Length: 426
Ligand SMILES: [Zn+2]
Image (cartoon, rainbow, N blue to C red):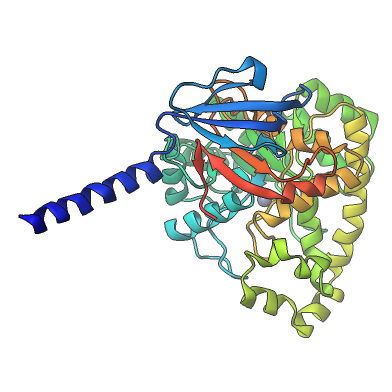
């Protein structure tokens, strides 16, 4: 009898432990005393309170104006800064393992979404290469038990050599439940044929028939203008051949289209010609796979990259892209943070912080880079329930030790990451 009682007690206490860890967000959590950057155009709130109830934000405001619900779990975050989780408006999830592609599995998707989350990237817009398992994870994430980054999906990067073929492929992705239709308009520095413009236009038409936005990969300014005139909804890379002109700036603003620079994509094409500085950054090393880093350090690989025409071309392209950000930003264009991470040697999670730093180097202020990576990014993706700390949105937020509005590099001082009010495991 005594044994049974002890056994029952043990089970009971296990249940208690289980319920207190697994359902922390059932009920309310109050983060008290932090500076709050909410991801909107509003200024920061000093000594603020964020209350999350059942995974969603219930109240945000200065301490004096917020009533913390009775029984709420209180988290003292005095001296820290709270901001929305980062949104990468252009990534790719699930395909890469080490430096190899072709490893698309649920396990790999979940691993990468966990990695993004630990780096504070709480949502990734996966623009191509998405298969059934990615769609399934997208479908299962509207749940208050979520502890990994959210994923949105495009399905395949749509190709086809006739109008009928391209419309059929758009339909296939739409039938699977894609959030975006992804297309490439590029000749890869003159090495491959570009999609013909009439087929591109048919793709946009078919996507819009299916009520889906089109995200376009591009390189050239002239294509960018065509793409905008054809009704494309999102520009997924920088214009990298020429300085943007007033015609383009007027057009993109008129069309209300957002622009995703993906500067670190360019960096990844040439940076491994020698040892990159970030290979000694502890914030990189804490998650980096040692074997992958070792491979990137190999002298053969380095010299291959040093002698690559593509690398030389993209190095110049990056300078053009950096200058274009400044011009577009000054022209009032909505810029969303995106990195094109996921393919080999584009490090998920770490590169998003590098991207924000580069956006600031290019001429955005830290707070503008933060908005581009939170509220503006969500808006550009048409996702109304993430991106800002406002009542009703998912409780996806970062607690930082230092203020990123003072120095964007402080985005790396993550004390904890929360998704739907759940603390992401370290
Ligand atoms: Zn991409």
